Length: 209
Image 1 (spheres, rainbow, N blue to C red):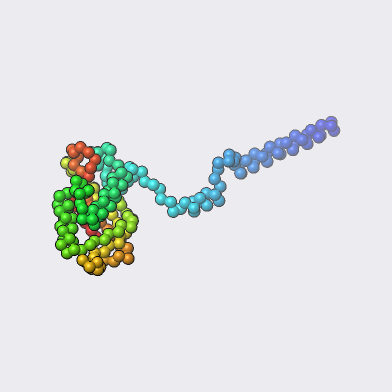
Image 2: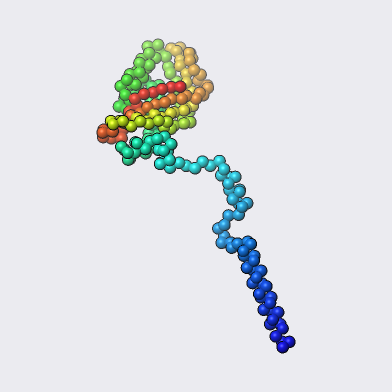
């Protein structure tokens, strides 16, 4: 009988050990190696607190109310359109400064093209030189859109940092500053006929603030 006591002690200690393990498991939980501690989570949240979630194509369309465009043109892509408008913006500035509108005439409404030509002709008449140094485009986004039975119109805002100056025939500055960057705000309206073949858009209006 006395020889059974050691086994009874072992059994009791075993039950206690199992009980303690069970309690610890409930309190601490089971680690798999992929859990995120509160400390790590807090550090990560602080580290990425300034990250803005990238909008999907659908989100962008909802933001600028462009759903109707997709109804008439399922292939329309906001990113591609804005990329193209940015490139065209740079082309127009260069063409206007150079006084040669050949590269943009097929993508610009006749009345807008004529206003560019008039300004260039007046410059040439006075023997003036225009300087526009486009440093960067800070903002390039769609602010409005309209779909009619025959056409799609999209308004794009451009906010860019530029160095602008106008020189007289003696290269003396009569307007602007060759050393100072300024923020220039432009609103351009593009149009595409719905029934026309091809993806090309036409610049139909420009506004400057």
